[in-house]
View 1 (cartoon, rainbow, N blue to C red):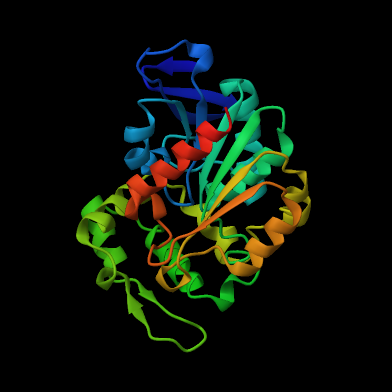
View 2 (tube, helix red, strand yellow; view 1 turned 180 degrees about the vertical axis):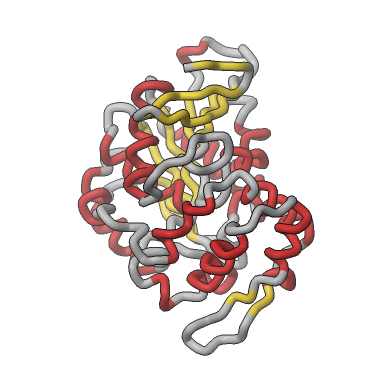
Amino acid sequence: MHETPGSAKCVVDGRQLAYQRRRPPPTEPASEVASLAFFHGVLRNADIFAPLTAPLGTRYDLWLLDHRGHGSSDRAERYLVVDFTADAVRWLRECVARPVVLYGHSLGAMVAAGVAAQCPDLVRGCVLEDPPFRTLGPHIGATNFHSYFAQITELLKTPYSVPQLAAGLAEIRIVDPRGGPEIRLGDTRDPVSLRYQAAALNKIDPRVLEPLVGGQWMQGYDEPAIFAAIRCPVLLLQADASLGGMLVNEDVVEFRKHVADVSLVRMPGVGHMMHWHKTQEIANLVFGFVESLR
């Protein structure tokens, strides 16, 4: 492992996984400081959590991973959810090597659930922000997310600058296969959001989306078995489906059927990027949840 201030590399199966570590000011003994590990969503990287790391970093020891094919991590041959999960398990055991509270957004929430199931000795609690369990599974073709990710896949086939990518993102047409209205992405997101997303896309392996668009992304990810193996308390955050939220009510019911200790917080009027739209509110929830585990 090669470490520089704030950033590091961890070798897993011959590939380097990049991560960041942000330590709080030394106001109390290190043994008393809780550690939080963050897993980002598909097409993003660890920097997506910057709004949360500012308020949480003053109190907690933060670890933030770039998934394979994202950010500064090496590319790989496969990009299934189980592959991201396997990397995260190895990273937690070999590089973090201490008890943590996991925070996962979107894909990262599914990864966090998988890690919690496999590492009950190291996971004290889990915050799952709008996990898209069945939404992005084998039936993704029946959702408007399919057209969105399919067009990004095409966009990534040609190298572009950040401004060019942002312009391309703005022209993406999201098509509802159920007959809903076609939506231009640039009409729903501001220019800065598009530019930020373009910057993250410039650090992506273009093959990352192939299994997702093809409906194979969830192969090997056994949701009932994973849920049943989670032993820690869970804070489950559900966004508004009408604004792009991906956690459907059927998955909430299934999750609560298997996991004994679940605190569910639904946030009407808030889209999938919950920690960006309601940063302070999410930070407050995380703080209360983590402190309850002490």
